[in-house]
Image 1 (cartoon, rainbow, N blue to C red):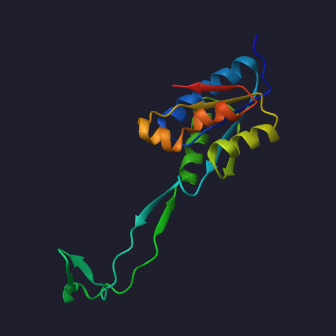
Image 2 (image 1 turned 90 degrees about the horizontal axis):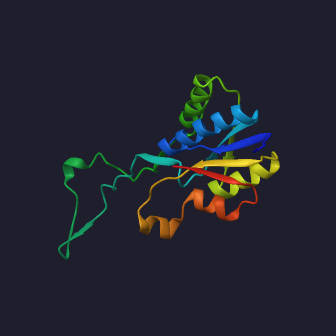
Image 3 (image 1 turned 30 degrees about the horizontal axis):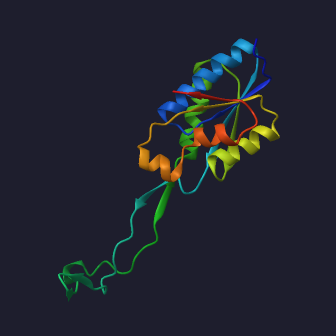
Length: 166
């Protein structure tokens, strides 16, 4: 029979990571293991633009080979503003905590930084996890080819067994 003292779950709030967390909770209850939910806070993947920059009023635009100046009616737009990002980490962590509570399961929730696969593997080794559980996100072939998937990277790079939940 499978034995584990600690199971770490990669959680990003997606439907597949929710399935992975529920599977890990069931498995942890069966083998009496502790659960660690790991959310990797990767600045590139975890933020969305909520206020895109606007062009400066004095900027010129090229259209059909001719330079034009913006309409004076929008002259109140001064200079480009920096992009403002919204971070979903707190929302994702609250969702994981709620799922643990609903399933009457205790668990640690750790926020990691950096590449999701690499940071989860490093953390799993640091806390002596016996298994990594992750969801499998359906991606189109081009995106998977260019970026790869976290579950594939975890499976390929980890010395710890990885359970991929679909």
